[in-house]
Length: 240
Image (tube, rainbow, N blue to C red; front, side, top):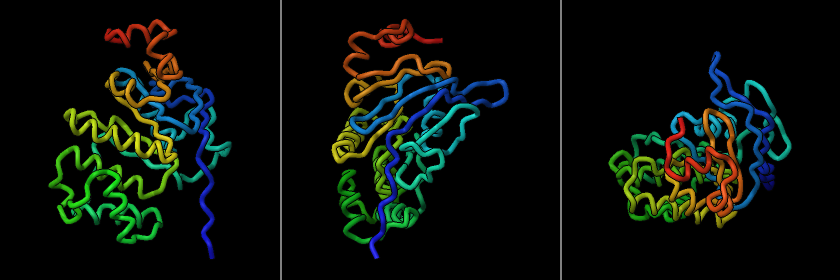
């Protein structure tokens, strides 16, 4: 019996979505369309709401108000969505076993070839038997990506995946983002790094105090920003 592939998660639509904790709005009336294609990059200062927005798109947090749909469906189990947090948890087992765990959790066959393919995609071939917790920070982040990709997602959410990494490790992550994007996986990632947003973004969204300030094609976003906050943020000024 052939398994029917789960329906697509895309496009994702947020209509006037807010997330409130008491009187505080972590996300405040955000309307946003996330379509297939090149990566969508979320930028903005600390506390702007980037992580909360990623959690809402993943389905981990329900909006306090507004409407959220995945490919037009409001109730959509996250079968084809995956998220990697800024500090991923490594299981106390080998690099390969961490990937096998990801495959098992997603209900995928744990074939040796599939594990090898995922480790190759993230540049960890040859480290199969290394204890995951003995990998470098950059290697752990790449292993977390392999584990997320074991879900065979068509939507991959990354929360500041290079925040604490050096330039070489950062480039390795950006190369993986480009590679999975070229395979048709939609990547939505947050970053503090404007250079990174320019390098990998197909479209860029600026968040500030939970509000979506501006969202558009990356080249236009940087060349001719419309909002005053965007102009200031791109110029390196602090948004408070």
